[in-house]
Amino acid sequence: MKLSCSLFLQALAVWAIFPGSAAVEDDHSPESFRKDIHVLLYENNPDFEHDPTSSLRFFKERSKTANLHTTVFGGKLQRPGFGDKLQLLKPLLEVVDANQLVVVADAREVALNVPDEKEVAIEAVDRFLETFHKLTNDSPNAIVLSAEENCCTAAMSHAAPGDYFDATSGARKERACASGRDDCTFEDNENIAQWQEFMKQMALDRTEGNEEHKFVYLNAGIVAGYPKDFIKVLEMMDLSGEEDDQAVLSGLMHAFPDMIMLDYHQELFGNNQKTNGEKDGCVFEQHVTGTPLYHSERMTQPLILHTPGRYYQCLDALIEILGGQTQKRYLLSMEELNEHLMKIGEISSEKEDSESRSLQTGEASNYGYGNYGGYGNYGGYGNYGYGNYGYGNYGYGNYGYGNYGYGNYGYGNYGYGNYGYGNYDNYGYGNYDNYGYGNYGNTAEGRRELGRGTATLRQLRIRQN
Image (cartoon, rainbow, N blue to C red; front, side, top):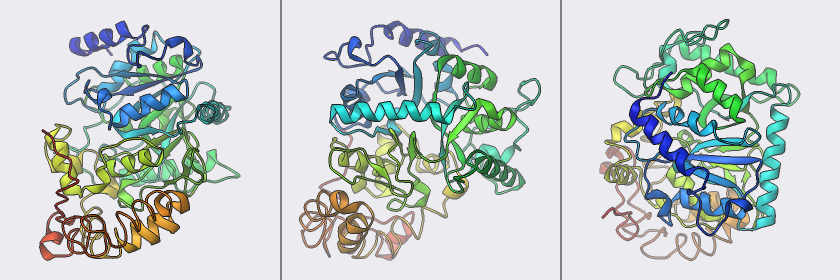
């Protein structure tokens, strides 16, 4: 498949700066980077890298700590489809050292899970490389994608597992629709049942002896592989700009399973799951200050943390645990976050945000009444006050003694002192205007407003000037 003219020119522009590593900070010479791995982050807003509160800035800063070469690509590609970013990849992969492992991710949804300690950060990258080779030991030419617990994208309900590829020739048979479009909405049908059964069975077969039953579904947000293997996958995918890349990659894994492996045990890539709710879906914690975060279920320390589905509240919280600056979007209701995303042009409407992928478990029924501000979760006192972000969930219970508990978000900062027991104007016991008693959904109007509450957060709201 040939690139369109505009995409090709942008790819050339990125290629032109690639050898000089212009995407890295001027005070870090290319000679200091390790030669065995290279991260490519997709971002189409050139200003994002220079925002000290952006996830991209944090990733780049911690990359320097780990001597990890990180390049940003995407230029000023306007409102790309799912497949556009992959179309830009091939020219970059053709000039990367063939012996470098390449990792590709969306800059706005990932954090590098290393502290600001060089020795610890370098060891984390070493562990990543060792784990990649372990996962691909039986399929040395495979690429590795992250695995999540929810299936599937909307496009996958419009095609069965064998519909996209001829399993003999590899030729494309059908095209995937663009998830979230009016003609590509989610349907809970036989196609979805077949996708689920296929991926569950593959996970069991591949994890025999340590069977994985939960994180079994392909997620296209992060990919790792060597250039020639990556290029072969891209050529086989023959992806058009608006096709759902996750659907097509799932179809390719069905037709040619040796080409794609999944990180079932969250060892390389750590997925947080927005569809489990803002609190329960953010699953990483720090046991000891100055160390990478742990997956609270798998007890692994993946190098890259992923917050798919614009789960920015979780992303900012995790970055702050690691010592970075953020926009503190965990202080926003979902309604306010959508307003912010519309202001900066990331989405054009709340409808687009809710339907952009339309995961089976991520439709309106999940983020409505019971999760983001009906009574019971972000509503009365006992959630962001004494109960959840204080003593109970993000304190002692879930995010551990030293992070959301006593040390950082608990007793000292988000707990007793600022966001917890009794401070006015913050997360306190029964205060007005922020996360207190009557804002995140304790009124009838709050329950009607997208089921997510009506807190004003005047002091902490992100404003786009």
